[in-house]
Amino acid sequence: MNIILFGAPGSGKGTQAKLISKEFGIPQISTGDILREHISRGTELGEVAKTYIDEGKLVPDEIVIALVKERLSLPDCKKGYILDGFPRTIEQAEKLVKFADIDVVVHIDVSINEVERRALTRRICPNCGKIYSIADKYIEDCESCGAKLIQRDDDKLEVVRKRIETYLSQSEPLIEFYKKKKILSTVFSAETPEETYKAVREIVLPFAKK
Ligand code: AMP
Image (tube, rainbow, N blue to C red):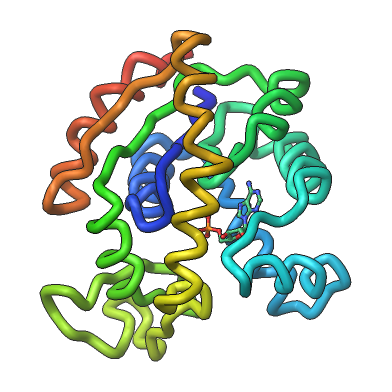
C-alpha cells in the first residue's frame, strides 16, 4: 500500500507514519528527515536545504522531487511506503503522479492554534528519531535509547509561525487536489497519538492486502 500522510507542521503526521510503518512493515519516507540527514552529514544538498528550512520556507520542488523519486526506486518500497511530508506543493503532487501510484491520502486535521502549541512543545531524539511532547510531561532524555532530547531549530516560535504561513499558502491547496482525485480521507487529530491512530488504521487497513 502506498500512502501519503498529509497535515500541517505539528499535526502528528510523523508519529502516525511511524505507527503505520511499525504495524505494516513498510518504510516511512520523511522528506524532512532525509533533508535533516543531509544537513547533519554536511552535504552540498544539505547546505542548500538548511537555508530554506531555517527560514520556515519550502526547499525547492526540483530538489525534493528528485530525492523522493530516487528513494521510491529502492527495493524496500516494493511492498509499499508511507510518504510523510511529501508532496507539499501542487507541483510536487503533479510530478508524483508520474512515478508513483498512491492508494490513499490521509489528511490529519488539526487547528492552527494546536499546531503552534505542539510544535513548540515537541522534542526529538537525535539518536533514534523518537518524537516527544513536553506539554504534559517534561522529560529530557529519550525513553528508548537514553540520548538527550533536542528541539528542532525550526520548532522555535518565529520559524513555526513562518512554517504555518507556508503551509496555508502552498500546501493546503493539496486538500482540494486530492479531494478531486477522490483519494483523500480526513482524520481529526485526537488527544493522544494512539487515539488518532485508531482512525488512521481504519483508513489504511483496506489497502494492506494489496
Ligand atoms: P518536516 O520534518 O516534514 O516538518 O520538514 C521540515 C522542513 O523540511 C520543512 O519546513 C521544509 O523546509 C523542508 N521540507 C520537508 N519536506 C518538504 C517538501 N516536500 N517540500 C519542500 N520542503 C520540504
